Image 1 (cartoon, rainbow, N blue to C red):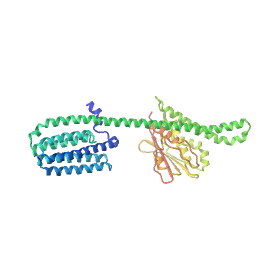
Image 2 (cartoon, rainbow, N blue to C red; image 1 turned 180 degrees about the horizontal axis):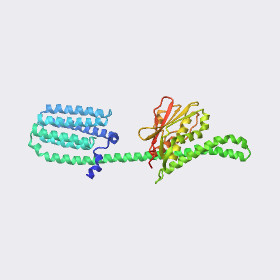
Image 3 (tube, rainbow, N blue to C red; image 1 turned 135 degrees about the vertical axis):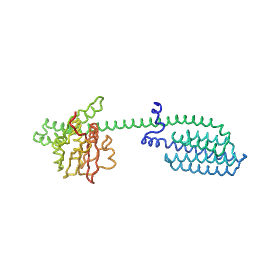
Image 4 (cartoon, rainbow, N blue to C red; image 1 turned 120 degrees about the vertical axis):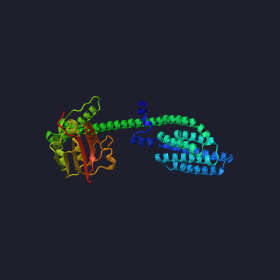
Length: 437
């Protein structure tokens, strides 16, 4: 039983993986179908010539061969027009029906020798399992139907002692060929699993490269630029090129930029620590309203610069249990993103509520250009490219990816909710704090 449970995939994968497998082997299965079709065309043409010189009723032979050749020619034509996985199954089944059906007719009506039918049945068993392109389960069904048809034919339609003598050979060859079929199917499916594993590893490497490039971009732009500005101003002040009075107006802007840099670096540190083995989340009760109120104060100058209103609607009982630092970073990035992409003179709504699934939902709604369709699939990944905000500025495009990572690490979810034209709504869902440790 352990053997069958371990190799059950030989029969069939789960539905999604089976569809992927069918696509993976489709090209080779079409080639296999062409091979079987060519063997049918070549074999029927050759037998037509041979049967002409035999002591048989050639009119039945000619008619059956023409039907088989016509059907096989149409199927060969279809293989070059494009066939689906289901089309291949139907085509192979038709070839078997045409060949075996024609052989039954000629064996009964044209006086064909008895060994002709059994030899053809052996050949059908072999081709259907090894060369037709059918999956093992499909080949087994087709061959079983052929075997049962032959048994009924030899017992009720044309009773021949030669047929009876061939039963042991038929059953043994049926068994042996399908054992070979299991081995072939196992190899093909194992090759598919290895291919998928390599594909997954390739995607992981690509993701790691994307993350590395994003981090380098952040360090070189979002972190280095404010520090360079501060360094330049301090250098000018020490050299007497700018007075303290002239320097003072820059303090507020520099302080805000340094706060953002500090939070960004903290986010990168938390992210890098989370990649380490043995990392454990520090989950505590978190008041989202307090976090957002603090962010409102932190972003006051940016809100004022764009004449934006940050409206907070909250449920006082909507408390969550999560790693507070991670959630602060996620909220900070979402608010920053909303400010960047809001039109001047509009408002940003922050709605905190509970749903019926023990979750707290945070909706962040801003008015501005809608996110392009082609960017939505990569919105919360490290593959997302930076987009120009309403003032033409560009960041590294890392904020949403970090936010999504931290939210999901805390058993939450983040997604782009449906919105009216000209509005963008981000939704964060996090577990409700039920008071239990």
